[in-house]
Length: 338
Image 1: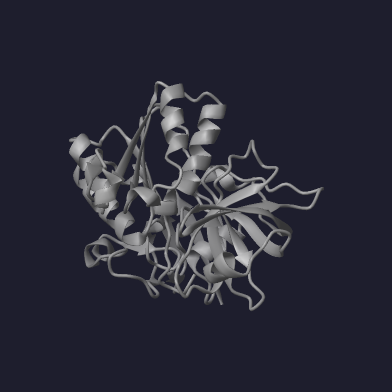
Image 2: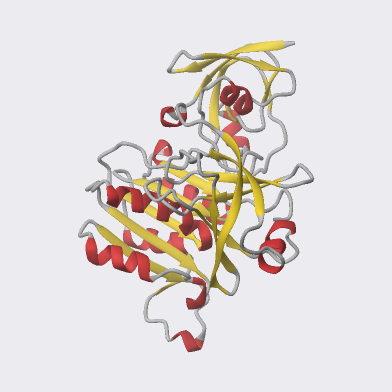
């Protein structure tokens, strides 16, 4: 049995089959709804059910609170239809013409950026290019059918090699391979691009918040913006534990010198005595709160671990940030070891 779903305010309609989530059905129908983790952890896919009944599915309480449900909200990456529906969500129109491909690739080279961060540079077949929006990610397709997702760090203009920043997760099935047995010329399979974490067309100033390797997609977005001479005001807050975890500080520092409309603010949560760190300390999203009393006129793009994303969403909205001006990519390692 299937149900008809109407998206407001666009009026677009799609069919959802039994067992399919609303997000999966919408994407299959060519309508791009916002999403991040796709497993109920980040809240990026949250929307309102205007009419009809849904099964909310399995999700984390922090991503969909009882208050959210009382307001008719649901997580479309988890929710399934129990009747015909009318839902309210702001569609992501810019991804509809970007084809998702499954491709072989070769590990062209590997570069250790920090003790626990590896840059992978992937080469596609000579007749292939991966079209993507800066900020999107790709999936590695593993031999057992599992997937591992990593953000693209290169800009679309520099697509001769695909660049990924991979943090070592002890015991992680894929990252252990990257740091122990993977070598240049290894062949992998990828699928992508995916995700709705990309810069929207707007005149609003932008605050980027990166935690650890959350810098990767923001690097892609900013490199693309600078390439096209976009003159919006940008500020990047990049949070890491110690100085050694801030693995590419020279690049945003160089951008700050080259572009008058860009500021870079690194923040360390646990600097070591030998770091002799003179800069900002604490949680990265709290550095934003210390600098901005009113966020009502801004857009925020945040990428990192789910606790950071959840705290930033909550606290920034308490400072006036509109709900539809917060965009996130949640690096969720909770559903399966990475």
